[in-house]
Length: 139
Image 1 (cartoon, rainbow, N blue to C red):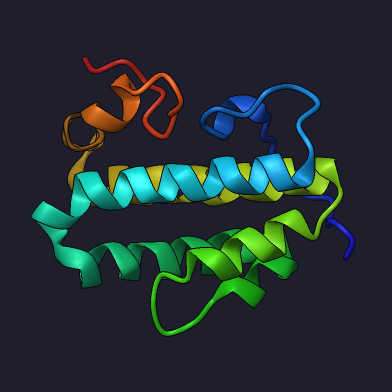
Image 2 (tube, helix red, strand yellow):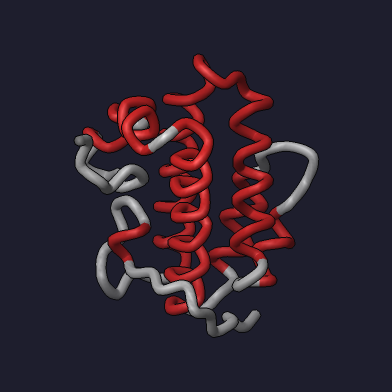
């Protein structure tokens, strides 16, 4: 699979736990771990279906720039499918697409509930050194 160039600029900083030069498989694992952490943090508030809906919408938004992400869409939050499509890219594509997906989620959640509440909801995710989903410092 090939990655798609995009105006969305991402870096390994957008993917929690990602190290510079990480392989596509490592980047895929980091993206999946970030989603698991976000799901754990948000499910008590939004419910599993709410988090799954945000996941699906994030995939839809990020797939506009990275069409291969659409392969991970399904009826639920299928993180194994996500792992496979991210790992199937070259390193640059996996980094850009995975980062764009997480950035779309963070931006969408911020638009829905505001940056401060997003920061508070994802506080446990951010305080985990392997996570950067909510990178902005709370006000």
